[in-house]
Image: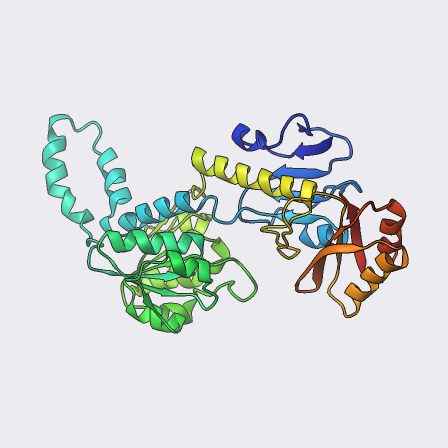
Length: 387
């Protein structure tokens, strides 16, 4: 029976994927084979030697010690796209909030409590202070056309906006789902020069940190509006406030609050609500549980952040999986072990991702643990599993 530890409260619908006849799922388990979590910070946690996989029910994995997991042969999964619709809906709401001064109007209206019968006349007198433009006919620039960016682009088109997108790493799958009415920008600067509204949907990496800075704001249309529902560090906080003060930006809407931003009247901070829907939490949990199950039972990897995607379908007989470094002669060295022990390889698949690689091997007949031990003793092999 597989032992699965949950480090956060996980949707029951997700946990139902793990059959109770084959899986023991609990907050406290000894020698877990897998872990499912959401926001629990694992950095100070001692990783059990039994642990083979960690599945994050969400896209971000900054709460997981990726390097440490990789060194110990622990595959880390996330669930890209599972919360995409929830984030898309919030971004569309943010488009309207950025234009129509809805939040400011609500806050002002509440100050009229106590005015009695005068409220109606005061509302009519003061409403002009909260006028703002419609989004129909305006241009939305979408930076990053992944699962969320494509949905935002398509929804904006249906709301009557012109859409221009930029993503140098646009996948074929994403391109299939993107509206044909979206225009392609050849550079970020080209997009910024055209857009009345800009929404960013890229991961936080060393190359994207602070990508929206004084230089980017200088290239934007004066009075444009910026939306950030990806990661707070994508936008330089000091530079965005300077752009708001100078009028280069009309408003900034973000799901990542700080005290400085909360004090700025031209900024609307939401309390990280992007994926805060019951549907999103269920989708993430179901995807995470399925990824974990397929890996533990069949050795297949999908949506891992530290090892390559690799799928050989259901394991019908003996299957050996090898997590190893991506170095020359590794495949030869592994297959030589099978040959030396008279074990015939029926099927094999090898994939690499950066410095790491993964090899799956199906064999004819049986395979013993001595073979596994021999491969695991090899230089540059991280972990070997016999399924």
